[in-house]
Image 1 (cartoon, rainbow, N blue to C red):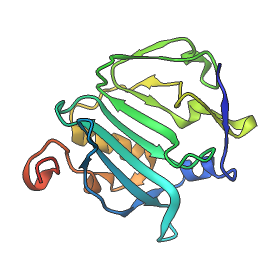
Image 2: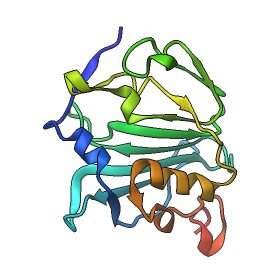
Image 3: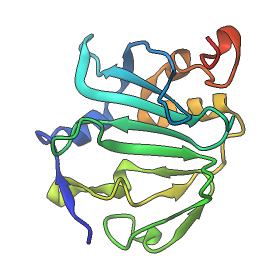
Length: 183
């Protein structure tokens, strides 16, 4: 059964639509399950971090340039890590099955193979001011599929409206000053 999360303070569409920038730089860190993660607090122009607004990146340390998750988060229904838009680059599962609910009817009951984006607009129920649950269940293929991690960051920066994202998210598999994995 599909449930719905209410919008926190009715701000979710506004927070998604405005330009954002990184408020506090961070580094990739090991999560203990073979993955690397980076979480960046974001601001929306006030010059201070917006409470709960964050960018999260997650990747497997042993799979360079595959199985990368990048998402924009904003608190919903008491959860601080609630994704409102997500990109999955070269997932090892290989596909995503869309549910038959919500906007973007052309995507209902379809399979999306390879890299894809769980668009805010396809998971937001405007009339109910809510996101579909089940972790953004509607996605569409990334076309073209970014060829490199740098290309992925450029696309993500544009999609999530985060200025200069690539300056704050180094390649997690690079050694030395270009990345964080072995520092």
